[in-house]
Amino acid sequence: MAGLVTIALLDEIQDGFNRHDVDGILSHFVDDSVWVMASGPKAPEGRVCHGKKEIGDVLRERYAQITDMRWDDIRHWIVDDSKAISEWIVRGTKDGKPFEYTGCDLWEFEGGKVTKKDTYWKIIG
Image 1 (spheres, rainbow, N blue to C red):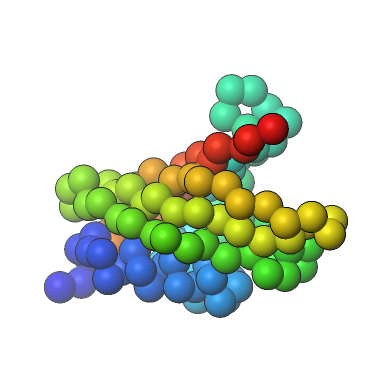
Image 2: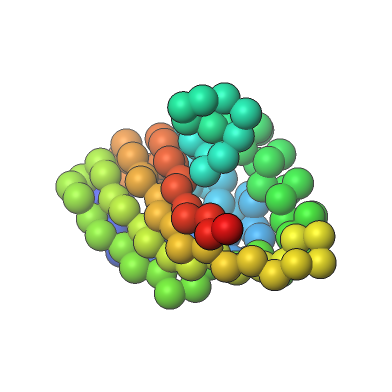
């Protein structure tokens, strides 16, 4: 049914992230979507990206820097018809050093499209 938040929808979005398919990822977002990143210069929330263009630019830059970035061991929970949670382990290599962080996304949807993605991860060290 169109507009519903489902595990299959979350898997489809996550598959786009693992393929580094920015256009495919953004096809699931509303035009004025928000991505609250796991880190950034502004307290308390980190970096906040507004709109598909900015989100796409950030993703393209990230994939260019971390060409092997991927999310594994993914689990999803549907909260209701407008909210979901995804838990995962993100892995890759940045500046010649491998990384592996446990993290999660808090998703908000409207009509089956992402309005907000709020990302958290644990950095050990």
